[in-house]
Amino acid sequence: MYPVIRYAKILLTCGLIVASANLAAGNPSPGPTTFVYVAPGSFQPLLKDKSEVTEVKVDAFLLEDAPVTNADYLRFVQENPKWQRSHVAPLFADSNYLAHWKSDLELGDFAPPQAPVVNVSWFAARAYTRWNKARLPSTNEWERVAQAGFDYLNGRDDPAWVAAVNQWLAIPTPSAEPNVKLLRPNVLGLYDVNLLVWEWVEDFNSAMATGDSRGDSSLDRALFCGAGAIGARDPSDYAAFLRAAMRSSLRADYCLPNLGFRCARNP
Amino acid sequence: MKTPTLALLAACAMYSASNYAHAAKAAPVDDCCKVLAPAASALPGKSIYQLDAPWTNDAGKPFHLAELRGRHVIISMFFASCRFACPVLLHDMQTVQSNLSPAERQKTDFVFVSLDTTRDTPEALHAYREANQLDEHWHLLSGSEDNVAELAAVLGVRYEKQANGDFNHSSLMTFLNSDGLVQFKKSGNQIVRE
Image 1 (cartoon, rainbow over the protein chains, first blue to last red):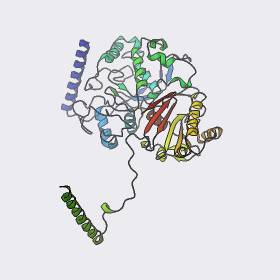
Image 2: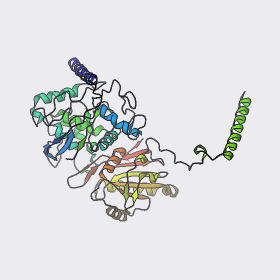
Image 3: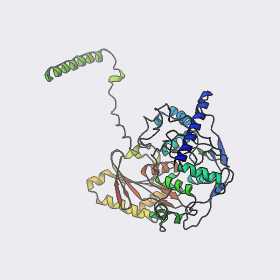
Image 4: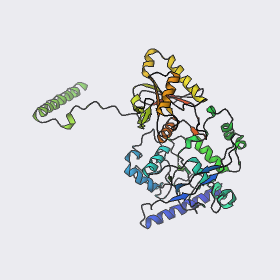
């Protein structure tokens, strides 16, 4: 456990050094965000169901190359006061909303400007994307990019990427996230995909619809108790498991210290 | 001890009142002192009536959930061509309605919002109303995908569109008080008190 914590501390220190270097260089506001074109593709769904679909096609779309940062989100709440921490309706965000910020309009020590914004609910993330003339990625879009490695389109063929993803899953959430874009981008040109924070998707509540209207299986029950691996296509894809579990445990008002988001657009 | 204070307060009040009355006669009434129309009291922070999405009812007319304020509401999401969970859901809601006393029934509305933005047009929902003989306490609503997603997220309904256009979805009845706060949820056989 200790080497992992040491790694986390090194990562955090690097992040802070880079952040302060940015500030020192007189660079307080974020640069324009980059939307990357993600070509039509597909991914292998985690779960087996009776249709035996082995590949889900995903149309082309645009995706920001990194998560939305604290600095980006600050601009949003400056222009949209009803989304400031002391004004937000409890219906739309729980009591952890922007808990890491110093105040309504001050980031403070635990919210470096170039770190991904966290502690935002699905409603808040969505509101930001609408303000940015965008939307959240769908679950299928996110899974499609989530499977891409650093050097190979199929991340499972990329040991360095597999190691990085599993390493991130092992690190406890830091009290201040490191900056975005510290690690190399994946082969699609996207940074920090499942290497920095969990990220909201537009249809998170399609995960594990309960089986009431399906005549068939114990598919959803099988995934999340002891026999979980039996219902999955590739039991070795631990990261995909955790994403699926994460999504089905979320409620829309949840604000979590390791859950952020980025914007998507139609091409 | 109390009486002198009370007397003092009364004196102050009378003094201010007389001053005020004098001012009111002497000058046009300021904004501060105009009688305002009674403002609707603010919605509680967790009221779902804060959602101001525009819906369309099965008569093709616009509808906002906040119009239900003051009534007891049972709200649920469905799609008209559902063959599995929704008939049971509908039956449960109708059972609730028939078990209410006449007085309660007067105050209680049932809201069914469609997940199926493609097929459940107002006409389709109206046909559903006729087929199931739903009275004027029932509201059958359709809206945009964005608004459907938002309402489902608020209520905690999970749903997924299938390739054939049907939906897998959780079977959830949500009971709202007159301010739009969730009181109970009934999912399958369980009642969860919020």
